[in-house]
Image 1: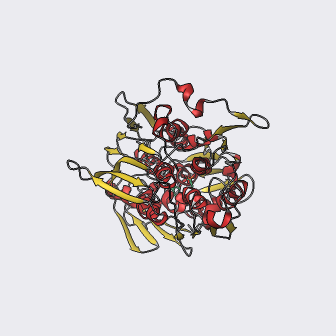
Image 2: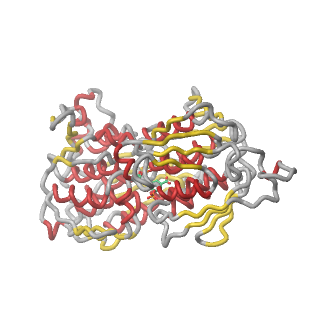
Length: 501
Ligand SMILES: O=C(O)C1=C[C@@H](OP(=O)(O)O)[C@@H](O)[C@H](O)C1
Ligand SMILES: C=C(OP(=O)(O)O)C(=O)O
């Protein structure tokens, strides 16, 4: 991350290094830095969580070694790496920062029972069970307490339909469970691929393509998990979504795009069906885009302070939902400029400049209706809380099954800042400060949710005295968040630049 002003030499100058406020037990709160003026700077983001964990899975089931560049290093990617390692993949950190992945032996029985810790990572708990079914054996899945309440039934049902036994230890449809893939699981594990197999038998070209039906109404990750593993299934897969709508359809689009970029044939005969052809994934190299969802809090810092923040290496074509910041932020009065790199037109720099009044102070308008913000919703909620006019976030009911029930958490934390939010089953209404009055400082709870921590950090920019409990939870996707945030919004050496907000 860089700023126009030099980084402070003494890290103790950073508010993030100040003594933290002790709370009950071991819990400590991080004093969120308030903006001393319009936030200005440039922020370089680490790799996308969603792209990293897709590429890790596809590398692990490839036919030869894979080199990944720009992969995220965070709790979710470490959990994915450990899970794939326990299934037989090997990872090598290269001296140049790249990651070499040596794939797992597809179809070969596992030696002994394997344990996979999903942590709180949706991509691990929804993608890896399908990967486990590519090797005969027993694999037990469990995770954090918060993971044990996240919906898993469609994954379990789909695996059962593919001939895999799943034993749930507690409540049906939830972690923990054990995936038991028999050696003769006709549909998924073992044997040569249809394209290589001239003989009749379970894996012959004449054998039907296995089918799975998934209701992805609670999470797009159910579809993505099946599609990713299907690339390595001996006969491919026909997959159908049976529910009404898919939340975060962009993430399914991302899965299909990544598969196609690696040469996998994926057809979509209609809006709710996919066919993945067998044929496998050759050895390859892939570069991972920066995380545009995690760009959100930094861009929001510009939007809510009348400042200006630039994110370099913004891809000009991307499947990341974070590209939507270019549409969302103008709805709150910010302006957005994408400056395409002249020598490499696939890259650009995105600059967001917050709205200001004639006297230069920040002006954040309400955005009225913002639909389907998916994982961007907590950051949008922070801006909406600080906006003057009302904003309604709709189509976000499935966020109740995320790291925490995000609708309930956002309503509870807004109340802590003194604002009553209209919480509906799948929507949140923010009144705007013209109606609610100024926010009051609070010690914000984060519910083990990285995006609740960044929500509170954004609010804290305009509410001095805000503290964030367990800011370390941002390590799920952005371990350097506290330091990155502090050096952008409250750099010691930049204090004299501060103006009115
Ligand atoms: O496939 C992915 O990488 C993701 C899909 C989405 O999940 P849901 O469809 O469960 O919302 C998103 O919210 C999550 O952060 C990442
Ligand atoms: C919903 C999210 O994560 P997960 O991949 O754990 O579902 C998220 O990062 O906002």
